[in-house]
Structures are given as C-alpha cells and as structure tokens.
Amino acid sequence: MLEQLAEQTYPAHLFEVVVSDDGPTDGTPEWLCDHAVRAPYRLTLVRNDHAGCADTHNNGILRSDGAVVLTIADDVLRTPRLIAEHARMH
Image 1 (cartoon, rainbow, N blue to C red):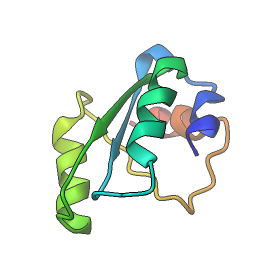
Image 2 (cartoon, one colour):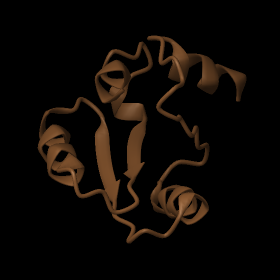
Image 3 (cartoon, rainbow, N blue to C red):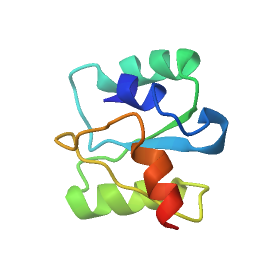
C-alpha cells in the first residue's frame, strides 16, 4: 500500500500519510519507522493501544495536518491518480 502511495501523480510534498495502528505485535511499527526514512512523502505513525477501530481512525485523523483527509483501507485500489483525483474533487 505505501509503495503505491509513493507512485502518486500528485506531488509527494503536498500530502502526508498517517498510519494509525492498533497495537500490532508483528513488527509493523518498526517497519513503518524504517520506511518513513525512504518515503517521498511525510509519513507519521500513530500508536494506539488496542483502542478499537473507531478510536484508531479518529486518532489518526486528529494527528493529521491536512484540511482534507482521505482514509484508505487496505482493500482500496490505489491507482497513481487516486490522491490527485481526490484533491481535484475539492
């Protein structure tokens, strides 16, 4: 998913990616911190301690800096124009 966001046609310096996790124990936070160094966009990890889906989403939204938020589930097709088209609609 994050690799597809790196391939967006929308300029990477104009969007941020906030990953709000719910306390995974599989090494995901460590992988995300490592990925953040190489990502062309700003990547922020929000850690939640098994807060549940709604709180995890809300905490991620609260930590974002943008005026517009696009939440993307793991089953959403992230075509290269996803963010550009979303921004165009606003």
